[in-house]
Image (cartoon, rainbow, N blue to C red):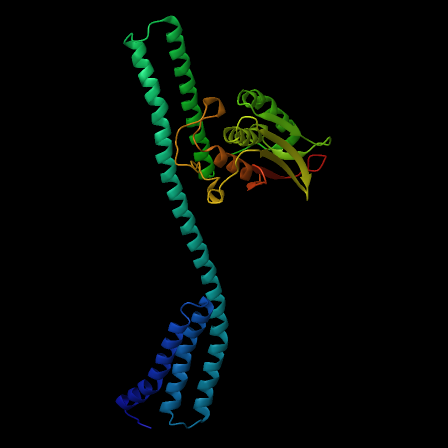
Length: 343
Protein backbone atom coordinates (compact mmCIF):
# COMPACT_ATOMS: atom_id res chain seq x y z
CA UNK A 1 0.00 0.00 0.00
CA UNK A 2 1.48 3.43 -0.86
CA UNK A 3 2.19 5.86 1.94
CA UNK A 4 2.74 9.03 -0.08
CA UNK A 5 -0.18 11.36 -0.85
CA UNK A 6 -0.12 10.99 -4.67
CA UNK A 7 -0.19 7.23 -4.31
CA UNK A 8 -3.13 7.33 -1.90
CA UNK A 9 -5.02 9.64 -4.26
CA UNK A 10 -4.35 7.26 -7.14
CA UNK A 11 -5.60 4.25 -5.18
CA UNK A 12 -8.70 6.16 -4.04
CA UNK A 13 -9.54 7.30 -7.56
CA UNK A 14 -8.99 3.87 -9.02
CA UNK A 15 -11.33 2.28 -6.51
CA UNK A 16 -14.07 4.93 -6.37
CA UNK A 17 -14.43 5.94 -10.01
CA UNK A 18 -15.90 2.56 -11.07
CA UNK A 19 -18.48 2.85 -8.28
CA UNK A 20 -19.41 6.36 -9.41
CA UNK A 21 -19.65 5.19 -13.04
CA UNK A 22 -21.92 2.28 -12.09
CA UNK A 23 -24.02 4.67 -9.98
CA UNK A 24 -24.35 7.06 -12.91
CA UNK A 25 -25.59 4.20 -15.10
CA UNK A 26 -28.09 3.20 -12.43
CA UNK A 27 -29.33 6.79 -12.18
CA UNK A 28 -29.74 6.92 -15.95
CA UNK A 29 -31.65 3.63 -15.87
CA UNK A 30 -33.94 4.77 -13.03
CA UNK A 31 -34.52 8.35 -14.20
CA UNK A 32 -38.00 7.50 -15.48
CA UNK A 33 -38.83 5.40 -12.44
CA UNK A 34 -39.78 6.34 -8.90
CA UNK A 35 -38.05 9.35 -7.36
CA UNK A 36 -37.44 7.31 -4.19
CA UNK A 37 -35.28 4.86 -6.14
CA UNK A 38 -33.14 7.67 -7.55
CA UNK A 39 -32.74 9.21 -4.09
CA UNK A 40 -31.63 5.86 -2.61
CA UNK A 41 -29.08 5.39 -5.41
CA UNK A 42 -27.75 8.92 -4.84
CA UNK A 43 -27.21 8.16 -1.14
CA UNK A 44 -25.58 4.77 -1.76
CA UNK A 45 -23.07 6.03 -4.36
CA UNK A 46 -20.87 8.09 -1.96
CA UNK A 47 -21.20 5.50 0.81
CA UNK A 48 -20.11 2.58 -1.38
CA UNK A 49 -17.41 4.71 -3.00
CA UNK A 50 -16.02 5.53 0.44
CA UNK A 51 -16.05 1.86 1.43
CA UNK A 52 -14.25 0.85 -1.77
CA UNK A 53 -11.67 3.58 -1.25
CA UNK A 54 -10.99 2.46 2.32
CA UNK A 55 -10.65 -1.15 1.19
CA UNK A 56 -8.23 -0.16 -1.57
CA UNK A 57 -5.92 1.98 0.55
CA UNK A 58 -5.92 -0.58 3.37
CA UNK A 59 -4.49 -3.09 0.90
CA UNK A 60 -7.31 -5.52 1.77
CA UNK A 61 -6.07 -5.69 5.36
CA UNK A 62 -9.25 -5.96 7.40
CA UNK A 63 -7.98 -4.86 10.78
CA UNK A 64 -9.52 -2.99 13.69
CA UNK A 65 -9.38 0.37 11.88
CA UNK A 66 -11.18 -1.07 8.90
CA UNK A 67 -13.83 -2.67 11.13
CA UNK A 68 -14.51 0.66 12.85
CA UNK A 69 -14.76 2.42 9.49
CA UNK A 70 -17.09 -0.28 8.15
CA UNK A 71 -19.33 0.02 11.22
CA UNK A 72 -19.56 3.78 10.76
CA UNK A 73 -20.42 3.38 7.07
CA UNK A 74 -23.04 0.75 7.89
CA UNK A 75 -24.69 3.06 10.43
CA UNK A 76 -24.59 5.96 7.97
CA UNK A 77 -26.20 3.76 5.31
CA UNK A 78 -28.88 2.52 7.71
CA UNK A 79 -29.80 6.11 8.57
CA UNK A 80 -29.46 7.85 5.21
CA UNK A 81 -31.15 5.32 2.92
CA UNK A 82 -34.53 5.34 4.78
CA UNK A 83 -34.24 9.11 5.07
CA UNK A 84 -33.60 9.33 1.33
CA UNK A 85 -36.63 7.15 0.61
CA UNK A 86 -38.88 9.32 2.81
CA UNK A 87 -37.52 12.50 1.25
CA UNK A 88 -37.94 10.98 -2.20
CA UNK A 89 -41.59 10.23 -1.54
CA UNK A 90 -42.16 13.74 -0.24
CA UNK A 91 -40.39 15.18 -3.26
CA UNK A 92 -42.44 12.98 -5.59
CA UNK A 93 -45.68 14.19 -4.03
CA UNK A 94 -44.50 17.78 -4.34
CA UNK A 95 -43.54 17.27 -7.98
CA UNK A 96 -46.88 15.68 -8.80
CA UNK A 97 -48.75 18.47 -7.01
CA UNK A 98 -46.72 21.16 -8.77
CA UNK A 99 -47.26 19.48 -12.13
CA UNK A 100 -51.01 19.28 -11.54
CA UNK A 101 -51.14 22.90 -10.41
CA UNK A 102 -49.18 23.96 -13.49
CA UNK A 103 -51.54 22.06 -15.77
CA UNK A 104 -54.55 23.58 -14.00
CA UNK A 105 -53.08 27.07 -14.32
CA UNK A 106 -52.44 26.54 -18.02
CA UNK A 107 -55.97 25.24 -18.53
CA UNK A 108 -57.43 28.15 -16.54
CA UNK A 109 -55.38 30.66 -18.51
CA UNK A 110 -56.49 29.13 -21.81
CA UNK A 111 -60.09 29.18 -20.59
CA UNK A 112 -59.79 32.84 -19.53
CA UNK A 113 -58.39 33.83 -22.92
CA UNK A 114 -61.16 31.95 -24.68
CA UNK A 115 -63.74 33.54 -22.40
CA UNK A 116 -62.41 37.05 -23.06
CA UNK A 117 -62.51 36.45 -26.82
CA UNK A 118 -66.05 35.08 -26.74
CA UNK A 119 -67.46 37.65 -24.35
CA UNK A 120 -65.83 40.48 -26.30
CA UNK A 121 -67.70 39.31 -29.38
CA UNK A 122 -70.96 38.94 -27.47
CA UNK A 123 -70.62 42.39 -25.95
CA UNK A 124 -69.92 44.04 -29.28
CA UNK A 125 -73.02 42.56 -30.92
CA UNK A 126 -75.68 44.20 -28.70
CA UNK A 127 -73.59 47.37 -28.38
CA UNK A 128 -73.51 47.70 -32.16
CA UNK A 129 -77.28 47.25 -32.31
CA UNK A 130 -77.91 49.78 -29.54
CA UNK A 131 -75.61 52.29 -31.24
CA UNK A 132 -77.29 51.84 -34.62
CA UNK A 133 -80.80 52.21 -33.19
CA UNK A 134 -79.76 55.20 -31.06
CA UNK A 135 -78.23 56.96 -34.08
CA UNK A 136 -81.37 56.25 -36.08
CA UNK A 137 -83.49 57.90 -33.39
CA UNK A 138 -81.14 60.88 -33.03
CA UNK A 139 -80.87 61.47 -36.79
CA UNK A 140 -84.63 61.28 -37.24
CA UNK A 141 -84.42 58.29 -39.56
CA UNK A 142 -87.15 56.73 -37.43
CA UNK A 143 -89.93 59.14 -36.64
CA UNK A 144 -93.21 57.22 -36.64
CA UNK A 145 -94.44 56.76 -33.06
CA UNK A 146 -94.86 53.01 -33.38
CA UNK A 147 -91.35 52.62 -34.85
CA UNK A 148 -89.84 54.85 -32.16
CA UNK A 149 -91.54 52.73 -29.50
CA UNK A 150 -90.27 49.53 -31.13
CA UNK A 151 -86.71 50.88 -31.29
CA UNK A 152 -86.88 52.02 -27.68
CA UNK A 153 -88.16 48.63 -26.57
CA UNK A 154 -85.34 46.88 -28.45
CA UNK A 155 -82.75 49.21 -26.88
CA UNK A 156 -84.09 48.41 -23.41
CA UNK A 157 -84.03 44.69 -24.17
CA UNK A 158 -80.44 44.78 -25.42
CA UNK A 159 -79.39 46.94 -22.46
CA UNK A 160 -80.90 44.44 -20.04
CA UNK A 161 -79.02 41.64 -21.76
CA UNK A 162 -75.77 43.59 -21.51
CA UNK A 163 -76.44 44.15 -17.82
CA UNK A 164 -77.03 40.42 -17.34
CA UNK A 165 -73.77 39.62 -19.12
CA UNK A 166 -71.86 42.01 -16.86
CA UNK A 167 -73.52 40.40 -13.82
CA UNK A 168 -72.44 36.97 -15.10
CA UNK A 169 -68.87 38.20 -15.54
CA UNK A 170 -68.85 39.60 -12.02
CA UNK A 171 -70.27 36.38 -10.59
CA UNK A 172 -67.80 34.25 -12.55
CA UNK A 173 -64.85 36.38 -11.44
CA UNK A 174 -65.85 35.93 -7.78
CA UNK A 175 -66.14 32.18 -8.24
CA UNK A 176 -62.76 31.90 -9.98
CA UNK A 177 -61.08 34.11 -7.36
CA UNK A 178 -62.56 32.11 -4.48
CA UNK A 179 -64.19 35.31 -3.21
CA UNK A 180 -67.75 34.02 -3.32
CA UNK A 181 -69.31 34.17 0.14
CA UNK A 182 -72.72 32.61 0.69
CA UNK A 183 -74.89 32.81 3.78
CA UNK A 184 -76.00 29.21 4.23
CA UNK A 185 -79.15 28.30 6.09
CA UNK A 186 -81.58 25.36 6.05
CA UNK A 187 -83.43 25.43 2.74
CA UNK A 188 -86.13 23.08 1.49
CA UNK A 189 -84.97 22.12 -1.99
CA UNK A 190 -88.59 21.51 -3.03
CA UNK A 191 -89.39 25.20 -2.51
CA UNK A 192 -86.46 26.20 -4.73
CA UNK A 193 -87.73 23.86 -7.46
CA UNK A 194 -91.25 25.34 -7.17
CA UNK A 195 -89.88 28.90 -7.49
CA UNK A 196 -87.81 28.00 -10.55
CA UNK A 197 -90.77 26.21 -12.11
CA UNK A 198 -93.05 29.22 -11.63
CA UNK A 199 -90.44 31.68 -12.91
CA UNK A 200 -89.66 29.76 -16.09
CA UNK A 201 -93.00 28.20 -17.04
CA UNK A 202 -94.11 31.16 -19.16
CA UNK A 203 -90.80 31.24 -21.03
CA UNK A 204 -91.05 27.52 -21.74
CA UNK A 205 -94.61 27.88 -22.98
CA UNK A 206 -93.60 30.66 -25.38
CA UNK A 207 -90.91 28.32 -26.72
CA UNK A 208 -93.50 25.55 -27.18
CA UNK A 209 -91.93 23.36 -24.46
CA UNK A 210 -93.70 21.61 -21.59
CA UNK A 211 -92.10 22.28 -18.19
CA UNK A 212 -93.10 20.16 -15.19
CA UNK A 213 -91.77 19.16 -11.78
CA UNK A 214 -91.89 15.95 -9.72
CA UNK A 215 -91.10 16.05 -6.00
CA UNK A 216 -91.56 13.92 -2.88
CA UNK A 217 -93.92 14.86 -0.05
CA UNK A 218 -91.19 15.01 2.61
CA UNK A 219 -88.91 18.01 3.03
CA UNK A 220 -85.48 18.00 1.41
CA UNK A 221 -83.36 20.15 3.72
CA UNK A 222 -79.95 21.36 2.57
CA UNK A 223 -77.59 24.03 3.85
CA UNK A 224 -77.71 26.65 1.17
CA UNK A 225 -78.57 30.07 -0.14
CA UNK A 226 -82.06 30.21 -1.57
CA UNK A 227 -80.98 32.79 -4.17
CA UNK A 228 -77.86 30.89 -5.22
CA UNK A 229 -79.62 27.53 -5.50
CA UNK A 230 -82.38 29.20 -7.48
CA UNK A 231 -79.71 30.61 -9.81
CA UNK A 232 -78.25 27.14 -10.30
CA UNK A 233 -81.56 25.56 -11.32
CA UNK A 234 -82.63 28.61 -13.34
CA UNK A 235 -79.44 28.43 -15.40
CA UNK A 236 -79.97 24.72 -15.98
CA UNK A 237 -83.58 25.25 -17.05
CA UNK A 238 -82.61 28.16 -19.33
CA UNK A 239 -79.96 25.95 -20.94
CA UNK A 240 -82.51 23.16 -21.41
CA UNK A 241 -85.03 25.55 -22.99
CA UNK A 242 -82.39 26.88 -25.36
CA UNK A 243 -81.50 23.38 -26.58
CA UNK A 244 -84.90 21.69 -26.60
CA UNK A 245 -86.91 21.96 -29.84
CA UNK A 246 -90.57 23.07 -29.79
CA UNK A 247 -92.87 20.26 -28.73
CA UNK A 248 -90.25 18.92 -26.34
CA UNK A 249 -90.39 18.51 -22.59
CA UNK A 250 -88.29 19.53 -19.57
CA UNK A 251 -88.71 17.77 -16.25
CA UNK A 252 -87.51 19.12 -12.92
CA UNK A 253 -87.25 16.61 -10.09
CA UNK A 254 -85.77 16.41 -6.60
CA UNK A 255 -85.12 13.67 -4.09
CA UNK A 256 -82.64 12.08 -1.72
CA UNK A 257 -80.39 9.02 -1.68
CA UNK A 258 -77.19 7.92 0.08
CA UNK A 259 -77.31 10.84 2.49
CA UNK A 260 -77.43 13.41 -0.31
CA UNK A 261 -80.08 15.64 -1.81
CA UNK A 262 -80.35 15.94 -5.57
CA UNK A 263 -82.17 18.01 -8.13
CA UNK A 264 -82.33 17.06 -11.81
CA UNK A 265 -83.19 18.83 -15.03
CA UNK A 266 -84.05 16.40 -17.85
CA UNK A 267 -84.74 17.59 -21.37
CA UNK A 268 -85.71 15.96 -24.66
CA UNK A 269 -83.21 17.86 -26.78
CA UNK A 270 -80.52 16.39 -29.04
CA UNK A 271 -78.17 15.68 -26.15
CA UNK A 272 -74.53 16.71 -25.85
CA UNK A 273 -71.73 15.59 -28.14
CA UNK A 274 -69.17 13.36 -26.45
CA UNK A 275 -66.42 15.82 -27.37
CA UNK A 276 -68.26 18.62 -25.56
CA UNK A 277 -69.04 16.76 -22.32
CA UNK A 278 -65.61 17.31 -20.67
CA UNK A 279 -65.82 21.08 -21.32
CA UNK A 280 -69.50 21.69 -20.79
CA UNK A 281 -68.94 23.55 -17.49
CA UNK A 282 -66.12 25.78 -18.77
CA UNK A 283 -66.87 29.48 -18.76
CA UNK A 284 -67.81 30.69 -22.23
CA UNK A 285 -67.91 27.24 -23.81
CA UNK A 286 -70.98 26.59 -25.95
CA UNK A 287 -69.90 23.54 -27.89
CA UNK A 288 -70.53 25.31 -31.17
CA UNK A 289 -68.68 27.72 -33.41
CA UNK A 290 -71.85 29.73 -33.87
CA UNK A 291 -71.78 32.78 -31.58
CA UNK A 292 -75.20 34.19 -32.31
CA UNK A 293 -76.95 34.72 -28.96
CA UNK A 294 -80.28 33.14 -28.31
CA UNK A 295 -83.42 34.88 -27.23
CA UNK A 296 -82.83 37.53 -24.62
CA UNK A 297 -85.51 36.11 -22.38
CA UNK A 298 -83.39 32.99 -21.93
CA UNK A 299 -80.70 34.93 -20.10
CA UNK A 300 -77.61 36.90 -20.94
CA UNK A 301 -76.34 34.37 -23.54
CA UNK A 302 -72.87 34.97 -22.14
CA UNK A 303 -71.97 31.27 -22.26
CA UNK A 304 -71.28 31.30 -18.52
CA UNK A 305 -74.58 29.95 -17.22
CA UNK A 306 -73.41 26.37 -16.73
CA UNK A 307 -70.02 27.45 -15.36
CA UNK A 308 -71.74 29.69 -12.81
CA UNK A 309 -74.12 26.88 -11.88
CA UNK A 310 -71.20 24.50 -11.32
CA UNK A 311 -69.35 27.12 -9.25
CA UNK A 312 -72.38 27.83 -7.06
CA UNK A 313 -72.98 24.11 -6.55
CA UNK A 314 -69.35 23.68 -5.46
CA UNK A 315 -69.72 26.64 -3.07
CA UNK A 316 -72.47 24.64 -1.34
CA UNK A 317 -70.19 21.64 -0.93
CA UNK A 318 -71.96 19.85 -3.75
CA UNK A 319 -71.33 19.08 -7.39
CA UNK A 320 -73.00 19.45 -10.76
CA UNK A 321 -72.79 16.65 -13.32
CA UNK A 322 -74.21 15.94 -16.75
CA UNK A 323 -74.84 12.85 -18.84
CA UNK A 324 -76.77 11.94 -21.94
CA UNK A 325 -79.91 9.85 -21.74
CA UNK A 326 -81.53 7.79 -24.43
CA UNK A 327 -83.21 11.04 -25.44
CA UNK A 328 -81.84 14.35 -24.30
CA UNK A 329 -79.51 15.22 -21.44
CA UNK A 330 -79.69 15.14 -17.65
CA UNK A 331 -78.07 17.76 -15.40
CA UNK A 332 -77.93 16.72 -11.77
CA UNK A 333 -77.03 18.81 -8.71
CA UNK A 334 -76.01 16.89 -5.59
CA UNK A 335 -75.81 18.57 -2.18
CA UNK A 336 -75.15 17.39 1.39
CA UNK A 337 -78.42 16.48 3.06
CA UNK A 338 -79.33 17.99 6.42
CA UNK A 339 -81.16 16.15 9.18
CA UNK A 340 -84.82 16.97 9.67
CA UNK A 341 -83.92 19.27 12.58
CA UNK A 342 -81.60 21.31 10.33
CA UNK A 343 -78.29 19.99 11.69
